[in-house]
Length: 80
Image 1 (cartoon, helix red, strand yellow):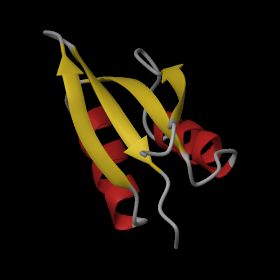
Image 2 (cartoon, helix red, strand yellow):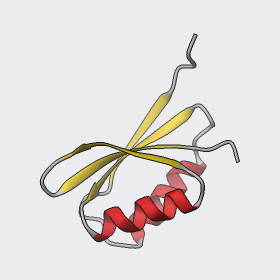
Image 3 (cartoon, rainbow, N blue to C red):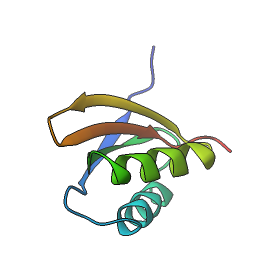
Image 4 (cartoon, rainbow, N blue to C red):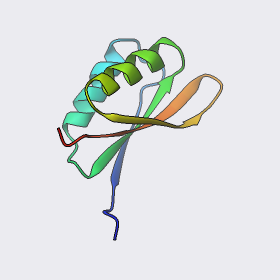
């Protein structure tokens, strides 16, 4: 039986860099290992900064949806 993953969502569209990255990392610190963060971001620099920064910190990041000006990411807190 798979563990039930809880999801918390934050909408950072319109939030400038690096504030969006800081808000993502702060939200991730509040999660337990069985939770994931659903993040809405603007495309372009916010997407690049947040995705690369989170991956460099060891988080699993996957794009799960996108619009013409935004993306939706799923970020899973790693065990390390």
